[in-house]
Image (cartoon, rainbow, N blue to C red; front, side):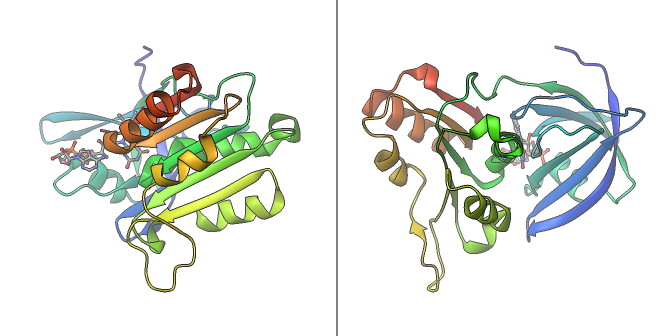
Length: 239
Ligand SMILES: Cc1cc2nc3c(=O)[nH]c(=O)nc-3n(C[C@H](O)[C@H](O)[C@H](O)COP(=O)(O)OP(=O)(O)OC[C@H]3O[C@@H](n4cnc5c(N)ncnc54)[C@H](O)[C@@H]3O)c2cc1C
């Protein structure tokens, strides 16, 4: 693993919900930053005498410049998430990477993307990459089942809804476990909607990202209950 340190400067920061932020960085001294959609970076910082390292998935597709984006939750009592959420625009952080093997399979097939919370980060990067060029998605169908508690937690909802309008082969299915009374969309956990999409299909891949209970429940459903080949089920766990 290449652990050479780079510095990134925060160029933009906005709230996605009261506890979640979207951060935009530029790698210092680089005209371009190469990575693959789905990869993460290992950020490093000092708190008094202790050094902390934490992984954050890149939430944007690679560009022709040195920019990248992440999204993260504030964790109670957590050092790194609060350090990053409080970083002022212009502030700097060290990191090494990109790392990780949560990558789109090649050749790309029709796929189901399953995410909860900030697990949307690497999946947003993959979806941005797929729909940036017609040749990457043409002839395939893609479903994003995005699970959250309430409507305010559906990060990037406008972006995914606009993509679904623009591309009939992209299907956006946000599902809420604690919706308000006005919510007309899907309800319940991600796995409650997967069976209907996945049953009897041997021609799809699945990409799952979130906390371990959600990842385990969906892997179990696809591999053990529905008999999918485990090589078609890729996942990233945040805990
Ligand atoms: C490959 C990978 C990619 C990741 N990408 C992202 C990302 O894109 N966005 C993101 O928000 N996080 C992501 N994480 C999680 C992130 O690395 C940290 O674990 C998280 O931000 C907490 O770090 P902290 O230093 O603030 O808290 P810590 O000091 O590590 O923990 C403080 C307390 O919070 C609990 N805790 C730790 N992590 C979580 C969590 N994720 N949710 C709830 N409670 C937790 C701990 O058990 C502990 O009690 C990723 C993790 C991995 C392994």
